[in-house]
Image (spheres, rainbow, N blue to C red):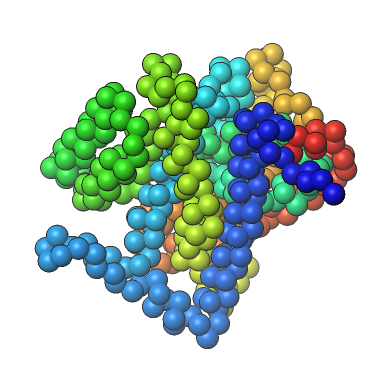
Length: 412
């Protein structure tokens, strides 16, 4: 029996790479769900004390006064998540220069949808929490989409899902991540150190000069990126943004042809492909396990209906689909764009519902917004409840409205 799996020889390289990306993201989403479930089990079982000891264990790296000592939870959130944001930046740069965000016509629909999908949830959260200044620090919690989780749900639908829906969902999520990065940089930085920022700027300038000199080896950028992470960590800007800055400095094919065309994979593509499995199967599950351990004992209905978790839940479950679908309908009515092939208004509603899965980035922003355990736990309650509800609603709706089989299944 012949092997029917796609290979680069049978499909165009872009389609093959896209298929590999979707398969990896979908499997990563399932792993993410499992890690969150394990965290809930550990936090609500006799393993609770061990789980808390794991999160609070102080790890010291360095020598003497040059050492950095942090609880393991912060090493995960500040260190491992910097690698996640490095990968996000690589994806954004690749998509902008040579992918789905490269052309104006392909960019306008996901850009407008993602922007509306950030604004409407934030407005709903503010409407419910405007009288509580400490709670208002989390206005951005319900604004992001978890692409791994969402693609994991789409994978359960198999051949019902048109390729255009996967492309639009992934592109909206990429723009979502870019907006989230800007929000973190602007609203969740504090206590600036001009010396550390100056050193970080010097490191960035060095990386830029390496790019202009067409240095294609990855190790100088990664070494300088590690130095940049330490500088940013000490600067008052959140350390994960060092991953973003490093990713944007990695060379890729662009209009100035900094990377020769004869190279099969640019340094950016090489690093992106190398990081994807580690992020999908290690970093994000570890992050989920460390951050999703909500103690459920004693929770009552009134806790879920408090302004903070309710604002997050409404933002994700209602605000996300309302913002995204309304923006898409407006763009189509104005004649500026059209829905992807294979999608109608009903399919767009299902996609909007899946965008309400805000798990990873929402948990991360909540960890930045709330230092006190009570408000953080309330935010986790809203995030987990809303993400599960959005996943179930999106899955059931799309299963009902999408045809059971598609011709374009052959491309996947």
